[in-house]
Image 1 (cartoon, rainbow, N blue to C red):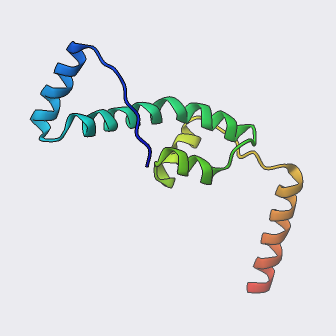
Image 2 (image 1 turned 180 degrees about the vertical axis):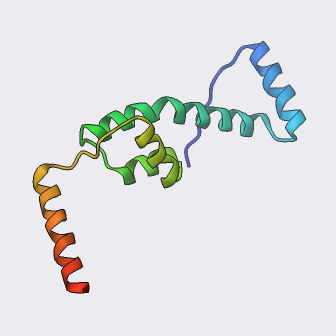
Amino acid sequence: MSQINIKINEDTDQLLSYIAQKRKITKSTLAKELLLENLQERILPVLLKEYEQGKIGLKKILHLTGIDADELLAKIVESDIECPITPEVDDYTTKFTEDLLKKTK
């Protein structure tokens, strides 16, 4: 695990202290939660665009964001993103599925 240090102004420090005290957690735990939540909100649209362009896979998005698969798929549907499968792969998987279904009947 890595560590980062940041400087914040006095008002922000007091706000973090107040919220952390109310939640009975440390300021660093609160800061980490806030950072990760904000990072996820900001990075997910970028990653979804890369997914749509075929530059990144679902597994990598799940790993980078930490969200669960159902939530990710819901975001993809909500964003009206088409699966970036080439026609060749789509034809292959369609034929493979049809062959498999024939064998199971």
